[in-house]
Length: 497
Ligand SMILES: Cc1cc2nc3c(=O)[nH]c(=O)nc-3n(C[C@H](O)[C@H](O)[C@H](O)COP(=O)(O)OP(=O)(O)OC[C@H]3O[C@@H](n4cnc5c(N)ncnc54)[C@H](O)[C@@H]3O)c2cc1C
Image (cartoon, rainbow, N blue to C red; front, side):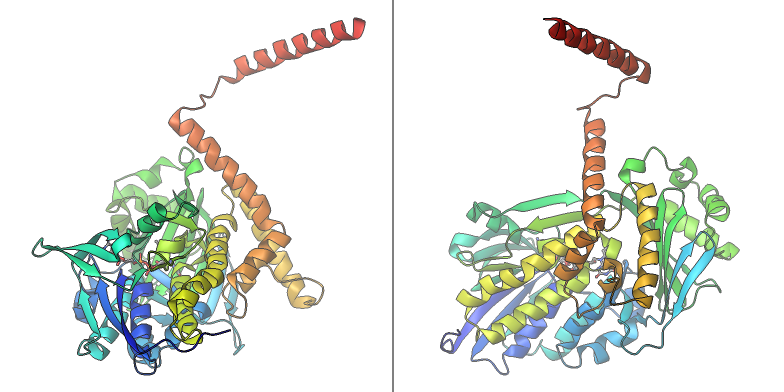
């Protein structure tokens, strides 16, 4: 199956994007130099500055959103010995408890099951800083590694296998050549544009997740355990929420609504007056109460940020042999944070690509297509599950959730008779995302939600753009009556002939 080992050579690799996916892959490739007959000569290009150079105190000012790493992402990180233990383990919180709040009713608890899936909660930028520190301490003296932070990749000249970059500091532009270009440059990927231009059979969908959300970091209230995750469905009118633990006795609370409900959400939650927002949370958020300072902090942060939106990407291939490119992470499959698996999958992409190189002895002609073959089903399963496990129709969503709870009790009691729901197997690394997708489809959840969600999105788009103008109900009724009378009359005439 495998070809003879590739001859000893140096391969110039450009990793575009120092997010979690790109940083893990560059570390794995660099580690391969110790054993492989091929030497990977890596250039990292990142438009932002290097978070790994900041002190822990400075990093506090660069907090981003909290990430739940499940076994998928943790196994990927652990594929590089020492990375988790030495660089990551102390910047996040290991989960020990999980809850769901229905109003003020709290369900769930801890587990003593050693086989229970792991959960590690960490700020996105803390992971990035930790992975960058790994590179600074283990790779920066290497002749096979250089990083170009504060440098934007402007354009991929895929025919000549080079990229045009511009330094933010000097404004100087230069071309950098490559033998392999890794597009780990996120949802608005510049690398991906090369595949759009080169391959007519490359399918790309870029859309948004149809959700608006805000997130706040506040002091942990007593009722919330320091190592617990709490799901907060319908915790405010038309809003779902999630509460994650942070280091420093903080919690990260995020709340979002789907945009078809924009006209229905209460005006107080849209207010830019912190007093109004604080009072709104006191009156409506029943899961747990905050301290007076908690409400004030929450409301201040709430009004001082815009509504966040993020994008969604589907591609039908993640590689190009003529362009010598692979796509990885959000560049390939950016998705809604609803199931918390985007970074897990980005890290897995990096791990799997390194494993494939190992399997095919660094032969790109075999490794690149194999990477697409293995990862495209996972990336597309990820994006579909994240979008359609939940329903934009709140009533249907609540019914699905209740049915899911019933299913999990029945599955617990009669595991051979009732299969686990997609939610239950999602974070378990023995299941691929494609298997979760199949369970969700077989149980009718994804199929039902997909149909409703697509209809709601289409109807919202039609109304927003003015393609469809809603008519007053009375005239609709009049048209319906006139139409029915005419149709009936025509039918009678035909019957009389
Ligand atoms: C609110 C929220 C919550 C989330 N929660 C979770 C969660 O619980 N669990 C989970 O697994 N995932 C979660 N995610 C998703 C996760 O953050 C992403 O999937 C992950 O960060 C993707 O990593 P990446 O390396 O592919 O890309 P990114 O993190 O997007 O990194 C891309 C990098 O490329 C750089 N770049 C882009 N363009 C250029 C250019 N032209 N030149 C140079 N550099 C460039 C960017 O500056 C960036 O540093 C969440 C996302 C959001 C928004």
